[in-house]
Length: 128
Image (tube, rainbow, N blue to C red; front, side, top):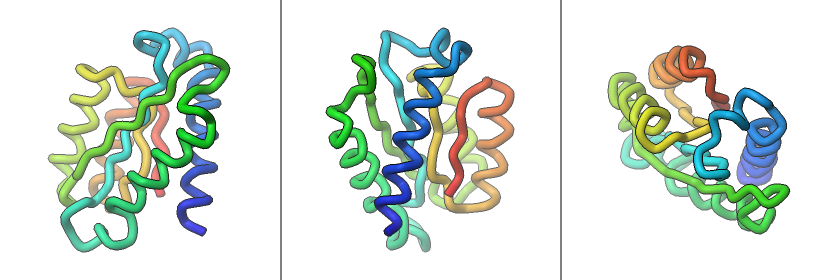
């Protein structure tokens, strides 16, 4: 159930990024980059760590790793349940790796930190 819901969220995020004029202008190299920022090493790792990464990759594969000819790329990171690490990863992804969508972030403190960054940088944020 969770992987189906996540696949739907990712598909929606990719469609939203592609359809949005602002997001489309910010897309780098005609690629929709989705950053899965989850807990891969802490207390939430069993419920969303590697499973979320696998579900995101499977969702992208179901769409042929592209939407309307625009490639989908999944990037995975571990926030270690720390807001500062989550914020730094989100900032690096957006500024350096040109991520269009940040998704997952099950820890409330980490999610609030990432929410502020994605709002300031005008990126899509999907919190689970």
